[in-house]
Amino acid sequence: QSVLTQPPSASGTPGQRVTISCSGSSSNIGSHTVNWYQQLPGTAPKLLIYSNNQRPSGVPDRFSGSKSGTSASLAISGLQSEDEADYYCATWDDSLNGRLFGGGTKLTVL
Amino acid sequence: EVQLVESGGGLVKPGDSLRLSCAASGFTFSSYSMNWVRQAPGKGLEWVSSISKSSSYIYYAESLKGRFTISRDNAKNSLYLQMNSLRAEDTAVYYCAREYCSGGICYGKDIWGQGTMVIVSS
Image 1: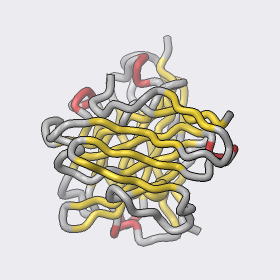
Image 2: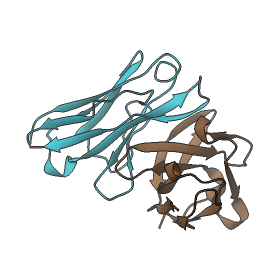
Image 3: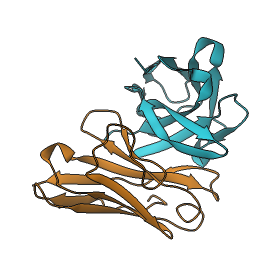
């Protein structure tokens, strides 16, 4: 079980807005920035959001991130079929003195 | 083109050693921290190890300390992972990924390799 807790699955219909949560603690999310990664089937992960809410060049503004206290969220608006993927949150943990990934959330576009 | 290419994976027996390599091209390798991340079949991402630009700071996942060693050669634009005493649970795709860090803050792993598969089985 991961220190960063994500729902194992999420779903939505095309055009809908979906949010994925990532819950941690004061030693990780509460003290450090959060990054989000998207992993399409059979491919390497891709950086989607860094520093809680920043989008790398080329990432559509349909993707947004936020953080409050010891939790973070990834929101996807205008859901598209190509958004079907696994999504991971990640941050640093002071207690473990290392990086962490959440357990991942499999997003299904119905 | 900015690129990371892993190599060195394969089928090994429990207790064996293996050295993974990651060749970087298209960017100034010495300006970036580097990471190894693995993914067991059908499982999520697991951070393995990180090394700073000049190798001054090295971190490992707690469960791997003592068995894995990360290193880099900036002159050769290469990252390495020496894996000893391999176990069945080390079976995974191993990715290398670059990350820009400054002033103690890192800004996400923005470039990933395609991964190299390591299978530990008798």
